Length: 445
Image (cartoon, rainbow, N blue to C red):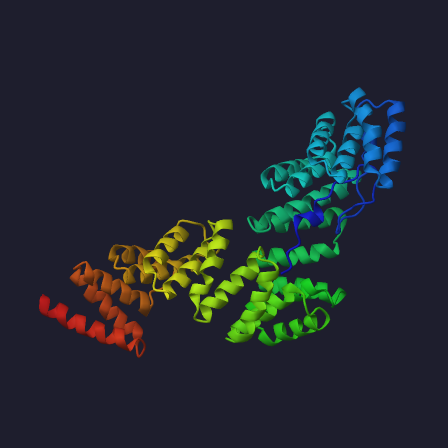
């Protein structure tokens, strides 16, 4: 999958124009904020220049040795504090870098780079909320030409932070970054990911096609293009892209996962499952591959083999409604109906990606509750489903049998008749049962 980590963007932003040796992909040169020192001395300027020469040579420890005495003497020297944070950050001292960045931001409230670099550091540490707070502060500062590259970097990092939780915001943040520093190659890929998160597969396909036009051999873009093509039902297009990609990168995990997905859609389980098992063995922490393998086991008729995989995924992401529904499907196929119903109840208490997904989960709950003889739950689940989707034959039959079990004679008869209208020639066993129950219910009047 094309899922570049925050680490691609989350590197410190050099303060001075001379310190441009470690910019992340997709950004331009950093802002020259050296004019924003808080009460610098001429001696301090010389010390900073010496430190920055050492940083240009990536002599982080040498730069730190030069800067530490200066910030002790001049704690409000924002430039020195920032450069110290940058050297500590690149030298692997995250705690020291954080303190120095905070000191720089406090010394000069207009210093964009300090807030951006602190936000990026916090993002690398997994503190998304604090990272977003500092990055948003940076983007809210007055727009000045010198700080635009750093503000663009902040917008790109925010777009990645918001990608899955708030893709609409991510889209706006990416556009803001492009306005600040023009479009970069990575922006096109990120735009594709945002379009996927917004469920706009046509726009995502277009974005990935642009990447491939410039870099036809890019395996991640190829895999992403194929993934979107599969969702759009363009099987041949996805197959051709995967074949081209695998010809040049036969062991690429993203391409192999795409190939396995394609095979699963063709119900070629014997070919798909070995690929997925190999990928899972090589990278057990890859959630996408683990989920695809679990689904493959279920689709192949061996759902018990998916139990441990779903359990591992849910330990990592216990409040993922789609994952809970997948696990419930596996449990239903194993006739573990009460456990499946419990999973679906948990899922329905969460936020689904779409109303239709929630409706389908409610339909599954109705089935699992009926099989485990909980008619009241069936009634509640069908109500949830039918508030979103029109009634269908299967859930109407479950509704009728639940009312029948609860001795709701009129409602049972009404829904048996509705089921017979919806079923047509489908569900012959249930049609026979509905006809028999209607006769019994008529005699019971």
